[in-house]
Amino acid sequence: MTAQTSTALACIVLAAGKGTRMKSDLPKVLHPIANEPMVAHVLRAASALNPDRIIVVVGPGQEGVAKAVAPHATVLQPQQLGTADAVKAARGSLGDFDGDVLVLFGDTPLVRPETLSLLVQARRGAGDPAVAVLGMRPTDPAAYGRLVQDEAGGLTKIVEFLDATPEERAIGLCNAGLMAFDGRRLWAILDAIGSANAKGEYYLTDAVAVARAEGHACAVAEGDPADVEGVNSRVELARLEKLMQARLRRQAMLNGATLADPDTVWFSADTVLGRDVTVGQNVVFGPGVVVEDGVTIRPFCHLEGVVVRRDAIIGPYSRLRPGSDIGAGAHVGNFVEVKASTLGNGAKANHLAYVGDADIGEGTNIGAGAITCNYDGTFKYRTQVGRNVFVGTNATLVAPVQVGDGAFIAGGSTITQPVPADALAIGRGRQVVKEGWAAAFAASQKARKAAQKKG
Image (cartoon, rainbow, N blue to C red; front, side):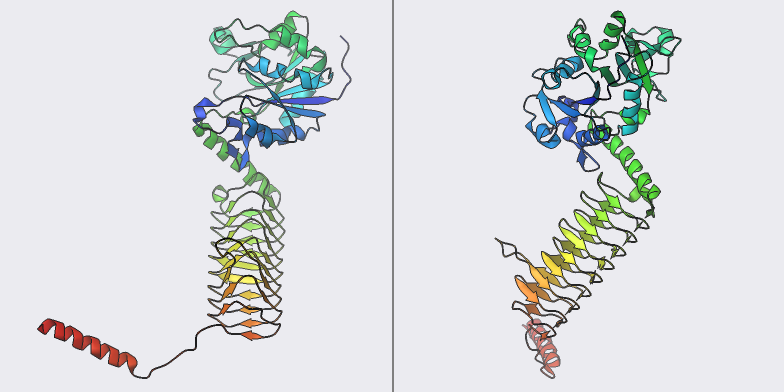
């Protein structure tokens, strides 16, 4: 057969597994790594190759998986009859596609685009192989299937560990599971795979033996064992989380961020850090965080769904919640919570404050203990605070309320009405001083105790 010149590519992601060892009602591929479902990481790696289409194979009752992978197409594998059967479930969607078909697994979240590209290149290599298999050389090959090659490096067979001879078990090149097929020959190969095995299933690994029997070449591409580590239990999920975090930390530092103690910083897959960002110890980035250049995040902060503009200072012990936008040069200090709010450039909330559903103008100072009361038990309302406002200690702003530019809110005030620009607002009870009252009260208490003892 002449060499294929098509550069078209389709990806089939197998995600129909029940994951019984996870002991969970949540489908296995939806368990999160770096705050994203495992299958989302696989889809991101596949998308980086710009395939013509991506098809995800799901099982019965896995509507949640179909929703999570949208807008990618899904097809149903009605019964769990093996990996080859799962690939065949995509037949109707692929039709007569004659490009390369890459088969991935939805529970291998560490797979990288570079590894997938190597596999596709191997399929398109010399000899026009019908099948290319990803191999790896783990430190402990354990019970992995072995990839047996001929003198020219072509793949002759995949032999399972239990069936391998001592010589074959000595082979260090192991089967990593991922495969690439010539779409023109894919269905004929899969149709020839039988189920004469202990489980009565159709195994994708048998494709190599079928292809070789039909006179087709098969190839191998070698990848990093870490790329194809799968998840079958909560223990393995935790292990891969650590591996993913190590990757994300390394990439953040390579991109120009300083992590004071990398092992204590936890990222989400979509965290974006600019250059010259400094992150202290024990900082957690939830989903949807963008941090611009020059920001300092001090220890023990939690950020989620927030944009932090350049040169801002966050923490220590700050919590930034979804929907917030922290302006350039702004300060959010210790034990301050900001939720669904904007802080203008240079605004400050340095300690012990709650800013919820509010718009705080540039240069405004939020004093210690100040809060916005945004919820009446049924609805939430916004607080609007202008530029260069001083909000005193322990002030309470009861939304909906507006405070004009340059206003001064006296400490301890409860503000329920609009405050004009440049005005002073005082909303607190008048102080009353009674000279000598404390001494008289103490004397009366002393007399009462004496009387009780006599009685």
